[in-house]
Amino acid sequence: MTSSGLALSYSVLSNVAGVAGNLFALTLFVSPIATFRRIARNRSTEQFSGLPYIYSLLNCLISCWYGLPFVTPGVILVATVNSVGALFQFLYITIFIIYAENAKRVKMSGLLLAVFGVFGVIVFVSIRCLDPIARQIFVGCLSVAALIFMFASPLFIIVIAFQTSTIHCMIRTRSVEFMPFYLSLSTFLMSLSFFAYGMLKHDIFIYAPNGIGTILGTLQLLLYAYYSRVSREDSRRPLIGPHV
Image (cartoon, rainbow, N blue to C red; front, side, top):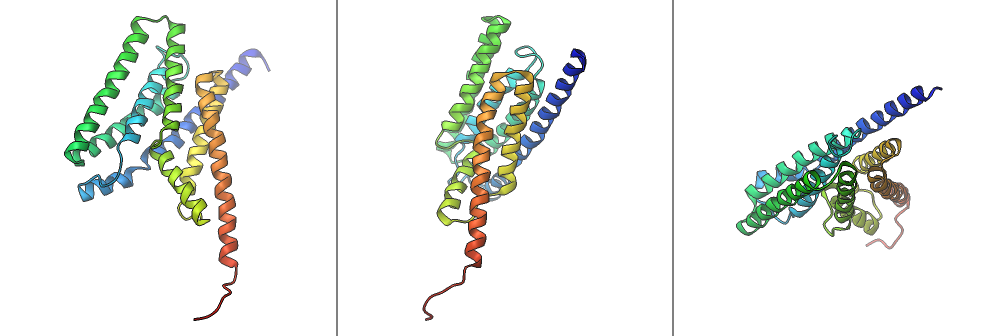
């Protein structure tokens, strides 16, 4: 195969991986809709926290900026997925603010303004103070840092926060009842797709965090497989004991 043919093959494969990552990410972005339907129906945020959506919005904004041609040419599919993600997070936060109590409403409004303020500073610095190479490294490092901070957060983000609690429930009850398999699979496939996309694009700021996400997703699916088997075995085990 000629060098031009090989380059074309890499381009096609990377685009396929990026589009697949976008589609799997969409599954994750729409997953909290049921929660916000409940909030709107009850006209109350109850015990839900809005912080995971704040973290996710900041991460999506920074990653979207990183994917724009002005910052990193050739990875526009990173910008598309994160622009959609940012829109979803903004809508979730808006609904949360509308139905939150006064104290929560003020706090969330302040945090939302802070997110846009921080993002505005990042855009200003990257445009006015940095050359193209330094700009890509600066924004890339921030996007990875934001993702790591999101992973390290005790609340985590939308899906991961939910999955973390369900993993605890699954281990405690030895049942997969609390673990939505297709949501877990979508998370794994999204990370795997963008890991492949980053590798094909030779972009460490894409493949490094998504490689970690792929590993975590694999472990989660292995846990699901193990406890699914345990659940089946427990259901087949005869109930032996004194009758009352």
